[in-house]
Image (cartoon, rainbow over all chains, first blue to last red):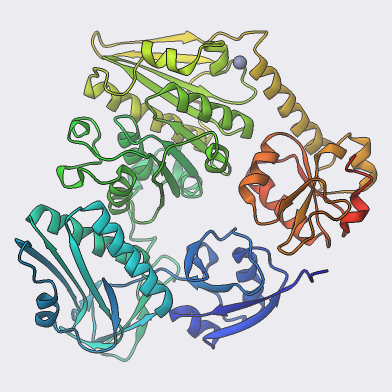
Length: 85
Length: 501
Ligand SMILES: [Zn+2]
């Protein structure tokens, strides 16, 4: 029987990296979606105040929906507004 | 080809790589670090990339551009690390036979890159202060100076509250022809937060007279790509999603679920019926328009208002209606589709704002030849099987919501409410689907299937620990499927056997 919590790998870039104070973290999470995971991370890193409404998310290096379900081993990166070019 | 580099960019070397005897044009864009931004002096910039994804996304953008602009060979290099004033941050070169292709492909790459490439830049000011560009969320820093919607916010019917509702709204537009183009522009202009565009077609020269999102530069490319790029320039604060394909019976419910309003801007009855049925099943208001020569019709269909598209055309096959009506290629007066598309946008905005719109079951006929408008009542057929089924669905949804607003339902109530046949067990990868109790299962990640099932009526989700089922039920409810519940507590599959008979 599989456990309901899963290991997820989260990396932080730019403004989120500075707010979280680290560039990556592996979490045991019950969060089913990226949106729920960000809320969990915000309680774990109180300085992570960047508004969720302005974020996109990448799941295993591809853009995904904030409500897409997460699976064990997923690599998650929250993407604040980009500024390439 | 797309590359990331931490070394200075050498344009001469890159130009050489694009040399080809058949290329009569080399179009180059260089993005350079400038010494000011939004009125503040800038000393240097620091670029940070999510390396793995930036490479994938950069390659995808280049491939899309080469695909849309046939004959273009694109090379794009983006710099990372600390850059001084005047240094090149991004270099895009396009080799092509003709200049039109080069300019269009080059423009496409830089605009997409600015939207999608996971690269961030930090501005360092001469006074030692620094900030991440586009990420400053100080109260009012962006919002206060933004007067984009000032003129409509000044309307008492809209105001700041209404503007916030528009910014939170999701609208689906099916068809980007003569109706969809003006509708999309006005919806983006009104500040709709998330527009989803659906069209499988490509831009043709004969479209340009009416389809006002497109120019000669986009001929041959997918309509949704050109439209999305144009709308993003128009409405940078909004989200635009593009679905480059037709609406089908297979994807209609997935596309409609979670939308606040849907616009039918299609040009054929097959699409019209599929979209209408999905909207009514999911309870999403549908604004439909159709144009024939100088005349157009505008309709709003809402579940529970009585009178559906099948009441209007009982038992008529779509192909027969297309032959009689306004199929693709039929003669049409350009301003007629423009007027009707804008009227669709107006009805959609009013639906989001809760303002009074077209009366239920009213068809508005607009004639651009004699300048008249006429309202006629749509028929309601007492024996319409579609209406009867929709009424049942609505009643079941309301009953369930009223009987207990709670998300969780226990086993006894499942039996009492006669929902045993609507229990679905959510499976995880690796589950043994032949185990006892696994009769009715859906993989927990198959949202499209769950949305379809939820649209068919009340649904009870179960899973081993009761966590995933509750979360998915909450999500589907948030999308408007109020009759989705989760079975309380954890439920090993074998324990479900009593339900699944
Ligand atoms: Zn009907």
